[in-house]
Length: 170
Image (cartoon, rainbow, N blue to C red; front, top):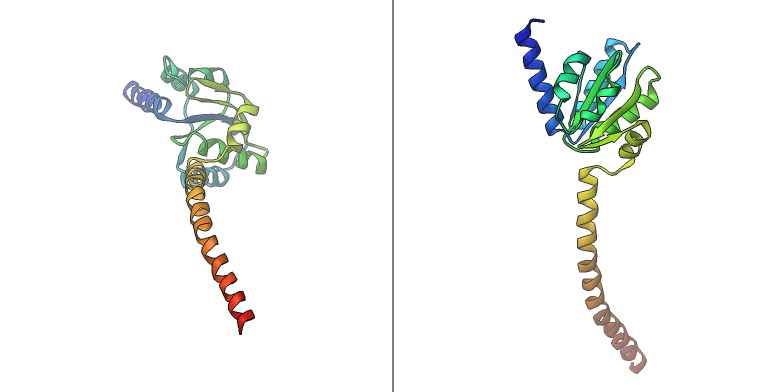
């Protein structure tokens, strides 16, 4: 890799560290190519990406970035997982690490906030952006449904009372 290629990698990593909602660092020593492809596919489905890069270049790219706290995790064979959704990459990495002992989550960053292993696991348990939107929409829609039910209820009660009176009169 010549100097121009290294500069390009550093620039790409810098953009990743700036724009990602979450960055997770894991050790992947012993993963087969097929297992790594499975991880990449799962991450792609969730809207994230996985990147293996030289730790030295990643450290240079982290200088002055919000995720600079992960620099201590960049030792040995590390892989970076990232996504714009603040939860997606953490969910995929956590799920994959539970099913494969060769992938060990070291930590990560969520903006300026440093995450250790427990922090990444906690982020992974949070609902995704789409789940949160669905919950908010259902909360907004619930009062309207309750009002419609309350307005319709007296009319049905009156109708049943009238039907009962009519049946008694006949």
